[in-house]
Length: 177
Image 1: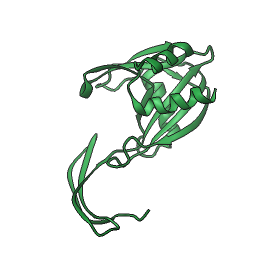
Image 2: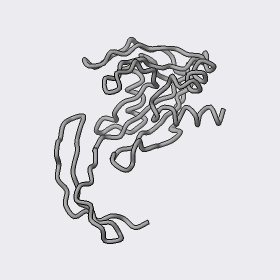
Image 3: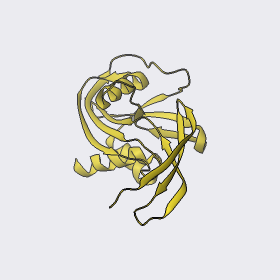
């Protein structure tokens, strides 16, 4: 596939959690699209965290955009200067109080490569344990849940888990274990 050529780029908004730009692009066939929108985000992480006793560490939080009480994996933004694994370890500890264990990155995915500029690095952390209390940001309201393997599978099968960026690594994990 041939790449598109950027003819013009203009930022519409630059905020900590939302950066959007409008590009004029020329496709390989010569066609020009004067309004191609790109959302720029920092890279994200999510973590399938499993305790030494085999419980999956999940979080429950309200998601305003969909007006949804959402059960999710621990996830967050990779801060500037962090590696993906450092960001994943920090987020898990801050949001849940769990840490330690054995870590490996199991996949890297894009949530919408047509309009979003970032990647999500998905980790598996096994043998995690409760190390401290949560240290939430002032805008976070997160409950920690410990679920069995069967409970997680049932939630996936029944559609209770809604976050696609978390379902992808979960389905991969269950397909390979």
